[in-house]
Length: 187
Length: 80
Image (tube, rainbow over all chains, first blue to last red; front, side):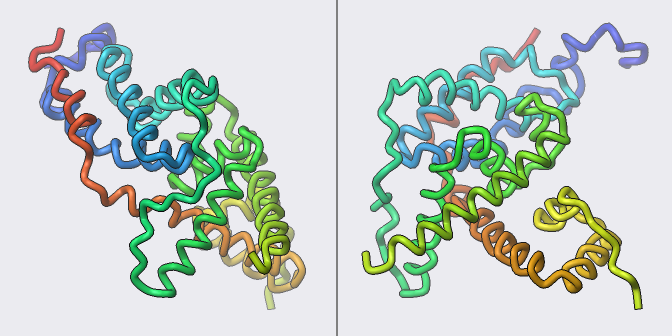
């Protein structure tokens, strides 16, 4: 029984079914697809994106003791992934593979599919052109669908800042897209 | 006929994110109906939101690469 367990926080990964190793593995596994999407939308190159996720998971597993059970695991993982991105990707250890369109998904099925893919590529390129602060918020809120509270936690900013940054980022993205589609006619 | 009340920029963000309560949504709808220019802008942002939401969704359906699964197997069965 864990009554009066206020001092047991640091060891509570040991107790109870919810924090058993299998459960930790399962919960971490459930978050992997989102981590992969975040990384890949950001860096495009699928192998490099998975390198970043791999780094993130390695750090997460090594520091599992610093995760406080009951708190938001997803937010905790995104903080780690963002640190990996800042340390690795932004430092340019690997050249950003930002400019080319991915040919990986080029198995065209229908014209409508293709049109949609072109549209999504356009959106993704516009996202890449956003200032970092705004790109962050776009990747976490509309793309990942995280709650404002989670994003405030991940970025370590007040929730009001999440809202105002989101508003500016949306407007900036819309302007980029408007400019892009006006300038690329005939390409 | 309900008089459309002012809504804040933050209300509109929640509306676009689909996080507005039904009451707020109705309020924003009424506000936009009375402000065609703002309505057109929000419509554009909603289309953009839809595209962003679809960005990378195919990745979510991919099987998790073994090299990532492998890391989780390193979690010891007995923790202390």
